[in-house]
Image 1: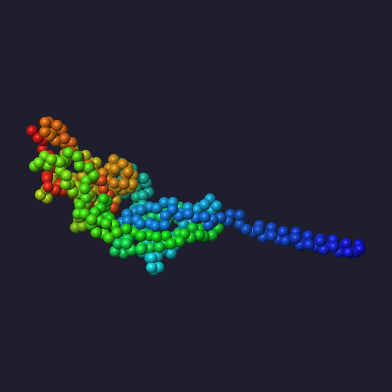
Image 2 (image 1 turned 30 degrees about the vertical axis):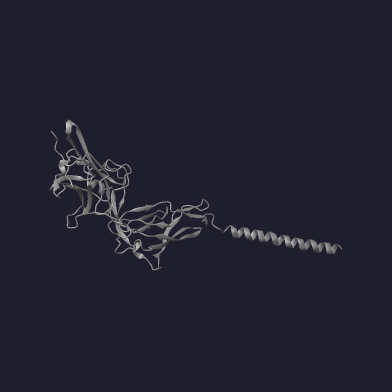
Length: 350
């Protein structure tokens, strides 16, 4: 009986010893796991899955991918597997192009082209780029519909890879469908089929502009924006001009109360063949930021032509023409205002 009791105790002791040894072994194994291993949660949200930027314009998409607080920051982001909707590789979107990147803040108080250009530098960037640490996407102002698929094409698919030392996750099958280039706004061109919907644009404001023949308000005022493709001079310019009802040039200085020095954020303004011409930097506005040269939202340059005249009964009439616009491509551009049917009356009435 005593011998049997001794055997049971020995058996229990051996079991306990083995269990303790196992705990020690597991402890030694887990002690080899790095303490700085990051966590990467599966809890990922996407704020948008469809992107339709305009070709020729810089467009930024922020806070596209969000992760829960269970993931260790920072994460690395990468565009992966960009392809056409049919599955063919699309390396043209990841090719590097020269673009201008701001290194200092634009204020709208710069006094020369040189001062503006000193605040930005040329770098080579992919047409479609993701910021490595933030995940923000940028579609740069390069490329054309001659080489890039645009709406109504199904466009492109791409994936976003998120990673840290804890692993990697993917957001798959995001859609990129660029719109055809529209070099200026407002534009009469459709951004899908590229066809003009109207022949001209309208001013934003037309006040007290009356006809020389009838003395009645001129209602049919048209605006045209065009690029002088034949001008190969270096640099970039913007000209402002006006035509009467017969297509003849109206001396722009007849808008005598216009602040020509600050009409646009341009420099070295001069009067040539009835037009006013500025040396400028494009795009215009340079950034989406309110200045004395823009509308209140900062996304359009604001052009204001003014003149006063004495009307009937000696009343002072203040005439205004306001046009808000944006131009996205470099070159020699002109904004032309045409008065249809009637020519404005600039002279005082007696």
